[in-house]
Image 1 (cartoon, rainbow, N blue to C red):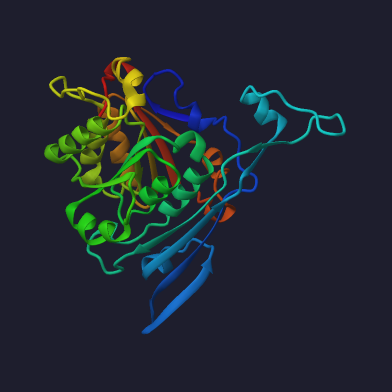
Image 2: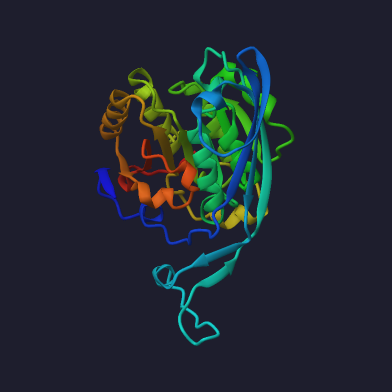
Length: 338
């Protein structure tokens, strides 16, 4: 891994050298596109390749994800996770099988190919991230609380919700939440839609208060394709920082939201959430500005090696143009996060 800034303990190894096994087979996906092409309404079934032009020109996208209930690990992976390799019927060390919960779900997305907002239509990195979370749902998603920044049409938040997250806050600017996300999110008890303009104190304070009143701790902040402009980099980083801190005058909840949270709530300050940031590199100047802003605050950040995240997604999604940054507020700055 490449460490960009900071010197905390090796908290990032969960991502740069993950111990949870790679599913075998990997989760499968297919999607159907409905939209206009050359004046004719076309339905493309069982699409597998990632094509930005086709996905962003569709009026509706129906995604199906199917994950097997069998996970296989090699002896090396078992040793790394401190699991004792088992002998097979022949008495030799072979491949082990671990049963996990099978899951299959569908997500239907409507979008506006002509939207003036970048969040008005799907960016294919969202498909990649949804598959990554599907592969790692047991370690990163199930019973976790997450905030997604710049959720756009809502695909990643919907996937997180269906994968068993405890609570997901799906956020974007008011126009995108009203015109797009609210049309795609239906009857999801573990998802909340909230307006968030990056860097706007009132929006951030409101969401932080909601988080503290709902869950004992925020586990992850997710940002997918949010690094696209030098002009917005500072506000994005400041928003990440706000969700990693709680000002001294922000009261903690008087009572836990769930009976099982009492022990968690009594253990004192919670650590800052981990920030998971994926970005397709379309504008290197925006990437550089983002990293510059990160260096200006007390974040620890690493770049996850491509081979370490690509192994959890199908071959058709292994793009070398996608960066995966993992950030966390340095321990010296940590207070109870939102």
